Image (cartoon, rainbow, N blue to C red; front, top):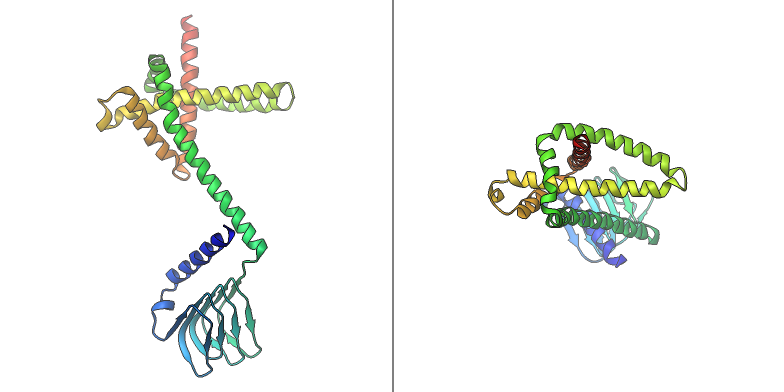
Amino acid sequence: MKQKFVQIVFFLILSVMIVFKSSIVFAAENVFDGQDTVLTETQRVENVVIIGGNATIYGSVRDAVIVLNGDLNIKSSARIKGLVLVIGGKIIQEPGAQLTDNVLNINFNQATANSLFIGGIFVAGVWFFRFILSMMLIILPVVTFLMAKDRLEPFISVARLSLRRAFLIGVVINILFIAICILLSVTIIGLPIAVLLLLFTLFVFLVGFTAVSQIVGEWMPRISDKPRWLKVLGGALLLTAGINFPLIGVIILLSLFWVSLGSVTLLFWGKRKQG
């Protein structure tokens, strides 16, 4: 597994180098090989690219020398005017060799391979977490609607008629909730209450997200005349797609959260005044 991952990294880096310096492969008088290669002292070439073998340079290279998964031996008579890049090997340079550009040696030893492997697992884990979260944001609103049905109508009405007001109230309530949770989490007794408040806010967000999903679904022309659960599904898909956008997604998610809190607050406040 680790070996395959390192090989993938090798070829990714090589691909980047080829993209940014495409003349390496396609210019005239290039050496492109997959075995041990020797460039004699009388040879003058544009580029040398070796994959899976060692390279020994006696002659002159005008542009670049790239060795992947092999060693590079630069003799004293060598003249290299461009980039020198060795990935997965080492560079042996004799005194007298002339190198006029950058020299990069990336050697994937066990520690480096482990770091890259752990980093790859972390990136894959983040991607998997985002995928699971996206699926939950699509499925849970539909399930919530099917379970609640007409009981969601008051939340939908508040969100539809007082969206700006619900947003502003939600921001204030969120700040108060954060302050209360911080104060409660300091003590052992208050910690369970803080957890319950957190679960409550997640429930409120789910209800509000379901309500906003139906409103967004009603704006979509192709499903505006479809069943309500399909409107919720369409709105949840669109909102989840927006949430997954970098930076903008965070703003959309926070806005939905604040609208949800504000809508629930307005609804309960209105019922209390009526009572």
